[in-house]
Image (cartoon, rainbow, N blue to C red):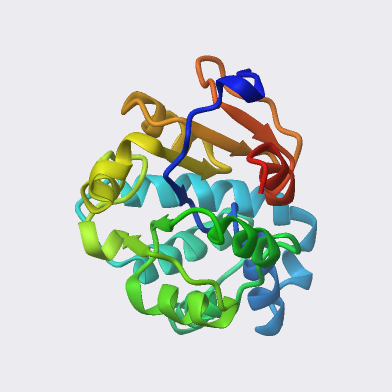
Length: 228
């Protein structure tokens, strides 16, 4: 880990959104509960979430389709996996609840602090319209939003990061990418030579070969690391 005197002079921060800034697990849980579907599958909820994430990654590796569709179909497949049924209209309603999913408690205050020093860019696998609605609700000004709909691709493909570099221009040499997922964000950023900060909210073990510049439990701790 680099010491304080060795830290690069960052010129911009790029962020993953769901899981890093937004509590996507709680968002899905509440949306499922609002449909009256949580209680029958509560005992297998963790299994459902893990399977859904796996299926989502499989769909995202195929030719591009809107994230709303991917979220809906991965939810339906996950319900089937745990012996339950989820019809398409209900799955789409759950997907459409995405703009209302809650931020983590530290997100808004930390982003405002970081945004007072750095341009903030968001690199996300969701569609443009729900993301705009979510960002408007948060009230945090992002300089740029790079969505899967913009680049017709999903992380961990390199396209999001390449587009962010293009938009950053000369500031790309001072980019720090902040994320929770080694698979979707840390690994592809590292392969492109982009320094990363791992927001390890769950105390997970870092996969071998992934070497973030910073590891913090939340965004407020990252603020302290960056002296903001």
